[in-house]
Length: 438
Image 1: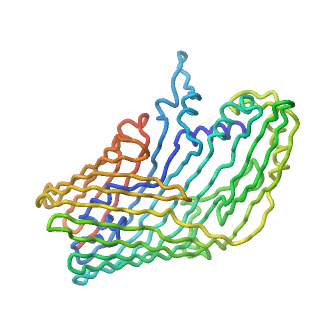
Image 2: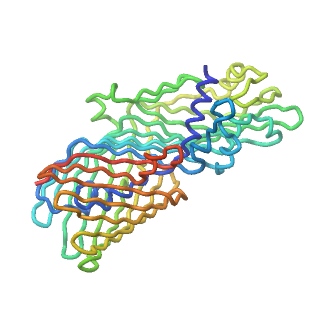
Image 3: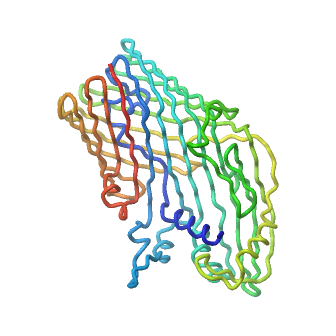
C-alpha cells in the first residue's frame, strides 16, 4: 500500500512543478475593490463598498506539460515518460498552490480618505524537492553507484486567518495606502532544515543515509512514523476555534500611486510583510544521524524490487526516528511586490504594464504583464492581459466586471488556455466574487 501511495503521490508532485503565487490581471481591474488587494493605495470612487464571499485559486507550472508527461502506447495504456520528466527538472524544483477565501469586506470613503476592514482565509503551500529525489523515485539507486543523491524536501504549508484594517488617502497627485493585518494561524508544517543524503558505495553497495532534518508543525499536521502522516485540514473540520487561536502575528501592506500626468498613473506596493508565531499544539520533529545499511541496489518504486521495500523502510525508520520537542517557532508570509504603469487612452480604453515579484522561503519568482481594458458600457468592462511568467510566454488572461446597479459580479484568470487545453497548460488561476457598491 505504501509503494502504491508513494508512487501516486510522486506522480502528482512531478506533474505540477509549481512556482510562486503570481496574481496579475486583478491589479488592472480598477472598477472593483479587489484591485486594491495588490496595492492598498488603489481605491474606487464609491462611497460605500461591501464585498460578499469570493475566492482566488492559483497554480503555475514550469517544465513538462501533462500531454508530454503521460503518453498512450499501442495498447492504449498511459505511461509516464520518465526521460522527459527528468530532462525538464532543475537541481531544485518547486511546487506551490494557493487558495484565498474572502469572507467579508466593508469600506467607507470620507472625501479623500477611505477606511476599510476585511477578513479572509489563506492557504499557502509549497514543496521544494531536489532533482535527486525524482531520480531515486523513477530510477532507484542502481545508476548512481559511487554518488550521493540529495533527497531532502522543503515543505512550507500554512493556513491562517487575516483580519485587515486599511486606510488610503490622496494628497494631490500622490496617493498612499496602508493595510495592517492581524493574523491567526490555523495550521502549519514547515521544514527548517532539510538535509537527507543517500550515498551508494561503489565497491560493496552499502547505503549511507546522512540526515539533518527539522520539521516544525502546529495544530493540524502530525507524524506518527516514517510511513504514516496525519494531515487533517479541511472545511468539515473548520470551526470557530480556528478563527481566534494562540498562533498569532502581524503583517503590513504598503502602497503608493502617483499621477505622472492626466493620463499616466504610476503604482508601487509591497504586500504581506510579516510573520506568524506558532504556539498551539506545536511539535518539532528532528533527525540528525548517519546510518549505513548493508549493500543493496533498490529499484525504482515503480518496479518490483528484489529487496522488500517494507524491510528497507523498517531499517530507515530506525535512523530517521524523529526526536520530538515542543518549541515555539515562527514563519514568514510569501512576500510580494507590484510595480505598474497605467495609461488612460480615452474614456473607454486603458493600457497597462506590470512587474511583479513573489518570494517564498528565499526563492523569488518574477512575472511581467501587459493589459488592455475597455469600458464597453456603463454596466460592463472587459479586459485582456499577456504575461511572461515561469519562463513561459503563452499566458493569455481575460477578465470582466458586470455592474448591475449596486451589484458587481466579476471574474479574472491570467491563463484562459488552461481551461481550453489543460493537457498543454502549465499555469492556472482564477478569482471571482460579488460586490455591493453605493
